[in-house]
Amino acid sequence: MLSNALANKTIFLTGSSVVMSVKELITQHGGQVYCYPLIETVEKETNEDQIYLCNLTAYNWLIFTSQNAVKYFVNKLERALITLPSTIKIAAVGEKTAALLKKHGYLIHFIPTVYSADVFIKEFQLQSNERALFVRGSMAKSTIRDGTGADEWTVYETHAHQRYVEDLKERIRNVPNPVVIFASPSAVDVYANEVATSIAWDQVKIASIGHITTAALANYGITPSVQPKIYTMQAVIEQLILEESPT
Image (cartoon, rainbow, N blue to C red; front, side, top):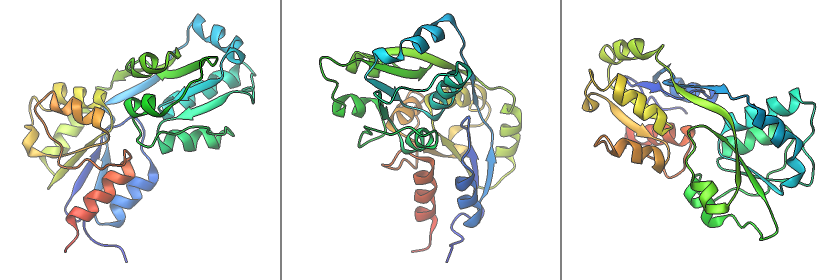
């Protein structure tokens, strides 16, 4: 039986993509949910693409840390009519990233125990005779490159998304018990610069996915009320439900 744990709660998702199952989970438990993406991604197309597409067989591993990287990588392969060689192994950070790779027919050969780049480089073992290619977005830090020696291919760029800022502020001001969920440092920065300047941080409950996002919040003196050990949107909602459920 579903609880009514999120009744009178209004949850704001600020990422560039939204999983329908998460929205359903929120409404099933009595909450309202709004999606106001504070960042957007666009494919990056440069001469570098052709270089990497023509030299994929030089790599033993491909490393993905986001669904967007998978999406734009697949787009590039499909346009070039290239099939990924079966000899290449794939490492994925995050269950959603892995799921999207599997959806496109790719086998996953390595996933870290915690979905973060710093844990990845501790657990991932690249042999001395192997080469890896990190398929990344423009905002990805150098952690994986520095920790593994992987080459980097930037397949998409992340930009601040101003379109929804005013609507988000207006909605927060007029709903009960707003909860804002952040899934990336980029979204935190946009919120801090565009929203928190007129709506105090303590007027909302903050939830964070991942310790990197939490560190970005700490830069503004904010400690999230919700930060699950599992770095997924599903885990955030489940923790909210657990905390709000009657004992």
